[in-house]
Amino acid sequence: MSATSAYPAPLLPFRRGYDRLLEVISAFLMAALTIVIVMGFVFRAIGLSLVWYDEIASIGLCWLTYYGSALAALRGAHIGFPGIVNAFPRGLRVAAALFAEAVVIGFFILLAVTGIEVVDILKGSTMVSLPGVSLQITQSVIPVTAILFIIAELLRLPDVLAAARGGGFEDHELKEALENLENGNPADKGGQR
Image (cartoon, rainbow, N blue to C red):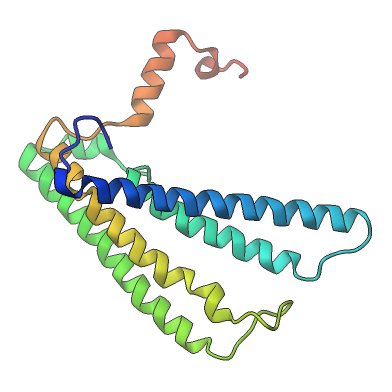
């Protein structure tokens, strides 16, 4: 969210709180996953492999990916094609932005519905290495984060529309590349970092 955000002032605290919530969840999952990986390494090194390590680590990575993606959506950090959209006339740019948002939100509505169906199908199934943990809990990340992603897209919509109506979308990668060229950064001239 930029300093010149087109976001409605009454909802700004909610957006900031939502951003903070997703950031805290993502940081917690990153820390927990780090601890699990280090524990797995240490226990394996001393010859006492943890039977649940692989399954928990892969589920943790999935959870981190889903929650981190919702945070990235709120911040507008996913891959896009601003150069193409910016080449459109203003009216078409707004239509393209609305179409893109509708497709993304539609996809996540479908993912949420399908995720709920998957969680329902898994009733009674448990993890292999931890039979006391239901697969419904581990797979609940699908519908939960799909809904979080939809909320993120809706919260970002005012800024998307303002950019489409205004000067266009900022191409962060192009901006960074041009700054590197201006600064004579050897990393972009085939040199080493």
